[in-house]
Image 1 (cartoon, rainbow, N blue to C red):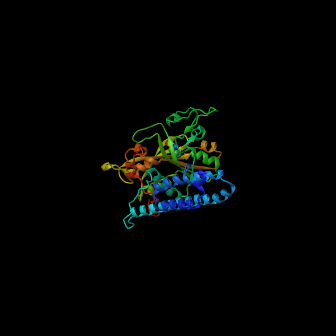
Image 2 (cartoon, protein in one colour; image 1 turned 90 degrees about the vertical axis):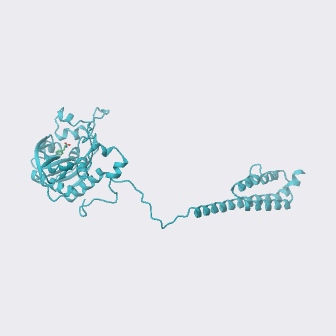
Image 3 (cartoon, rainbow, N blue to C red; image 1 turned 135 degrees about the vertical axis):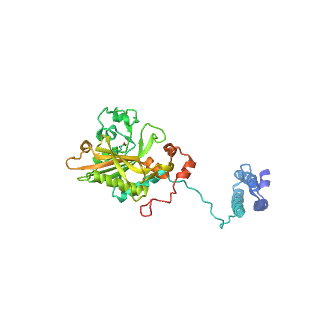
Length: 364
Ligand code: PHE
């Protein structure tokens, strides 16, 4: 009887509906949640009413079921609608409060800068692309064969130690890989995989256990290799002089070749460029001083043979240059170690805009 008196009066349901709906229509976020719990929560008024359906006679249930369902649905709908209204009103208010003045000048944001080494490598690839060189690549972790043996370093030869090589732990097969000590293994990889004529440069990281003002354990080299039937020392010299002129943006450079030794070239030379060291600055191309800049030579017949090329038919030249050194000379950094110290003040000062891509036509 008690239940009947509570539930079967349709007018009571109507009153309930009207009162809830009017509270919902005026509710703020917190009040809305309170109404929801009060009416539709587990112990809510409407939920409890619905629980009583089971105890009703079928006839009553047929009458009350739809009414109660209708009540529940209309409250749910009203709550959702009110919630959406409150959210869009809040957004509106926020947008009004945060209004921007689009006519204010934009604040420039720095998106980082191009590291001078990267910049110099881009400049060098421009210059060499213009001279018809293709770009070759090789891994930083090399086999002893590519880094030394194929390049005519005799086994146990002190030159292997001379490079202050970083050796890796022997692998399962007992092979001891190295961090490449120069870019010359890319010569080997290229000759093993391509037939002459070959005209490539290779750039990248190289590693030697050494650290002072002009040495870092990781540094960068650019390697050049030309193999055909006729290229000779004069071509080598001409190519390197053209490189120096283009890179340092000077009309004329004076260079000299000093005899040297590399196991993989014969004859071998080091090239110096004329420079002026007065006033604490190095100016390339003029003056009374010489600056050692790279190693080069004619590819040794043994190296050609090791790479499956017949030295009686083919010959050519190779050169290797320290990229970091070139960068220091052109952009005036005094300590190589700063290049890799990741000091953002240094990077800001010496870095290049990513939007300024070097090209020969516009000047490097
Ligand atoms: N690989 C040599 C070095 O790192 C440089 C070089 C390259 C010399 C090619 C001659 C020819 O010292």
